[in-house]
Image 1 (tube, helix red, strand yellow):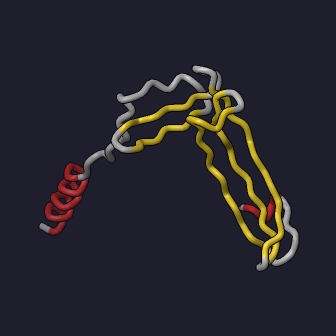
Image 2 (image 1 turned 135 degrees about the vertical axis):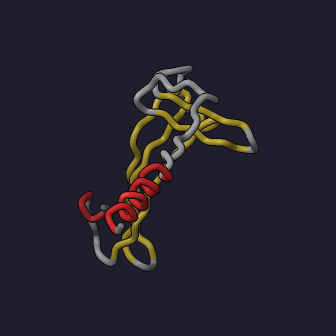
Length: 105
């Protein structure tokens, strides 16, 4: 009787599990390896490297702050050299002494 109960419980668990939902990307078509997608005021914007004049590049920086040394790394999507309709993602970290790339992880 225990075996039947165990089989029933295992079968119930297996068949009651559902597949995780995946993100629906039907609102936009991505054809570039590097892209930025955001929804702002219910409007989806898509910036893709090499499409419609948009290109992306990396950024980095270093500055001193009252609490130490700040290192910045990121990526930016721009259309030409204008800042209109551009997007960027930046990571900043403050260190008590000068850091290096491996410290950012």
